[in-house]
Image (cartoon, rainbow over all chains, first blue to last red; front, top):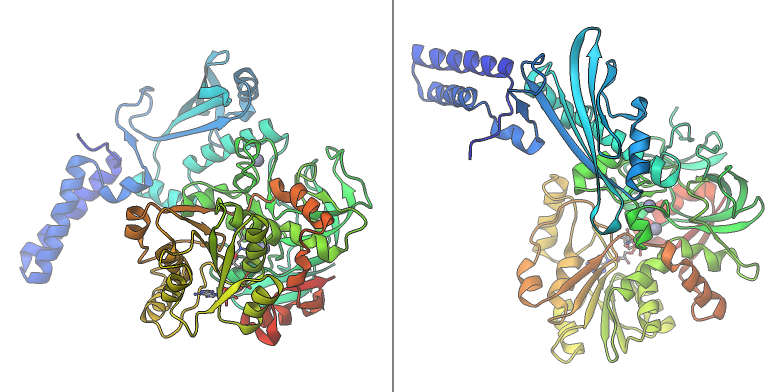
Length: 205
Length: 390
Ligand SMILES: NC(=O)c1ccc[n+]([C@@H]2O[C@H](COP(=O)([O-])OP(=O)(O)OC[C@H]3O[C@@H](n4cnc5c(N)ncnc54)[C@H](O)[C@@H]3O)[C@@H](O)[C@H]2O)c1
Ligand SMILES: [Zn+2]
Ligand SMILES: [Zn+2]
């Protein structure tokens, strides 16, 4: 099975430049240590060729080279799902309010598709420009366990895959934002409030 | 108000902090009348649990008087005396509906942190690191109690604070540890650790019909309490080879179930394995020292159950997977689902079946909590359980 790509175009250009630089440097005055540099360089080239860095795989970075919205040349893909112990109509109604969609900040939400109790899709616009697009689909969880909400979001990469990987490790990525929005929704729908500690006392001065 | 704040490893201080306020409609504010220090607090004190922040208020075992309730709390009124379960649970989610309250999906605002470490997040817990929500704890004069319409249990007048306090954690924990052993007639249960959790697990195993209980520790005062108060047989692991002693005591077959009431800071004597674990733990190659858990698995009779009440935080090494698999052992564990034990155990206390206050050895003012932590950590002055009065 071909590896699913997790490097953006910018990353791959960087890998080619870096890989060639290492190999050239090694060939100018060959030695054992430089041979190591050359092999690292060729590994970079190989990754640029496959478009995939195996070390990013555990982080779940996924690049889509042919996004459904052709205004974006390539995107980073986020997928999250959550099960909410409430009827589908109620869960759908909550998300049907645009401010409840797990859209990325600083983009204006434009509803692109709206099928009651089944699907909501939106485009995140920055002025005229498309910054991200996403969708939520709703289905019944098996055994009467409520509703499964599956979120799919794609955004224009800035900072490349490595930027996305770093953001993910730091816990500040679009992935986290989507996951948190879904969790927030579940808490509101199931308990009537969102868990919070903001404003509680601490001995920190 | 005064509150006990975590500052660093082995550094806790009583400080003046603002009083807690209602944040959500289902909150209550409780004026704490009694709290306790738990073995779990020692894991935070020792710096073994990630996600602690300077200034965090500790304490997950507490009770007190309701002073204020949020608009959505209809079952509690100011002035009522309550004991509060240490897991923070919403009562509405998939897990709460199953009675698995310590797995509540909605109560941890920092679920993403726990997911990174453990795959999925369990419930939030008072004073138990930001990994589990960063909720301010109850070793303080006042505490905010979320989901106050499902957690707190009203305490009948005839019970003293000391009799009711341990419904917050260690009595249900000891009880669940014993319940997880699925005790049958004639069963022998071995319990590693005779701290408050181990002692209450012993008492619970006997309540649930165990024929014999064998208690393992190295502190004479703890073993004495297990033997004299509860009627357990004892093994001092600093002197005996535990595996051989257990084999002998159980007719060569091993205990029918083993309870680990020790957790990730287990201690071992004259033992290369212990040195190995300490070095690995210090180098962060292994987060937990699993001496007791390994021993419990090796000791358990084939087809038996290993019930793990002791807390683990990360990864362990040299896990005896072969013994577990080839001898059809069952492992049962978890942070205690305290809510589901509150009423039945309250009834046990009021009926006089059990009075968990027998574990208390020290009663101290909150202001002396830092000294109390040190004493409890070092097991000085025959300390078994400290309760704190604000
Ligand atoms: N599952 C839960 O919900 C839950 C709740 C409360 C406490 N706990 C955990 O239970 C454990 C015990 O708590 P505690 O308050 O009784 O603590 P404690 O520190 O008073 O007791 C631990 C005991 O274990 C003994 N011990 C250490 N190494 C041993 C070994 N190798 N073999 C046998 N005994 C050994 C110590 O001497 C000590 O007496 C802790 O890990 C705590 O975090 C779990
Ligand atoms: Zn505890
Ligand atoms: Zn819940």
